Image (cartoon, rainbow, N blue to C red; front, side, top):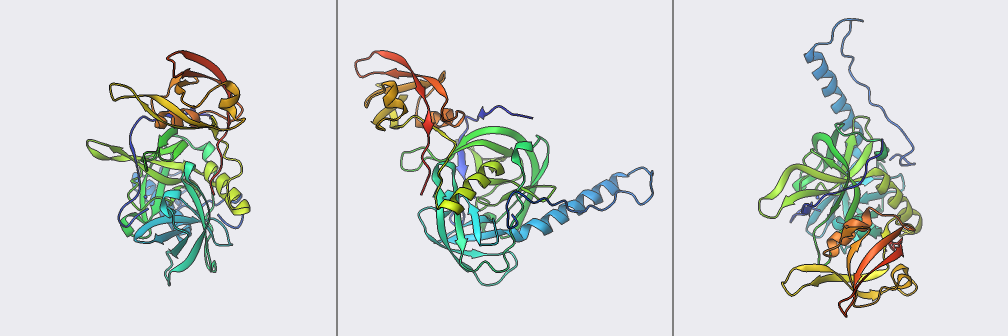
Length: 361
């Protein structure tokens, strides 16, 4: 089943706190189906509610026993976050906002023992993903990554991580929605990471869960918890969290492991540097072009420095955040109409063949 991307126009809060940050040797290729306690020992006998409950409870226990050893705690400075062991070489995938600007980390495994040293392999801030490598990978248990494109709304999922520093914490919920597009908090006046095709879940995601695992009842990682919904007036919204889908996470992680950086982001770009344009009433009125990539998509379409982009593919782009949201739903190579207001007050619509967003370092 395919799901059309849905723009989620809510404020989101990255799972950060004072002490937070919010695969088998061939990740994504293995399968694992934990055994469940039979619901009835008598063939043909009716299944009672008590037997059903015990069967589900046993399944939960099996999944937790299987996956939790793959979820590590990452310490950077005074902050804590979570990560997932990706392979037998010691690579750990996490969120870019967990690693921040750090290059050296300490990793603690759920099975105990002294913290292990780790270093940054590469980061992709635009998609909020990063990979670190543990210096001593002995005894690490790679997780099994599932196919997030096959998820269904209503599936039971478990979120595993280290919220508020409580290592090895597990919460449960369901897949609430698919195909969301959400944006992390602004940093330095710039929009945060854009998560396309995010998995929305009711499993509680708290500060420190970032970089951990969203797991199905087959014991497969189908997402990386990254954001929790936040109402600016009322605070965090319980039961509304978002995870990077495993299809995206494994693709980006493999590129970083193999190349040290992302070579193919699969994300659309206009080839411009922009900032939010403010009208005379003090309200956002579009995104102003500060620089244009030479021979890039926008320059070829006639967009120039100083122009204000007010719409892309029929959707208003009142600020840099909404522009990021719109571009996250499009593909490189796609030709789209872009409405541009020029410095002389005139307005034109140009056709832009979208380029590809550059990868991180």
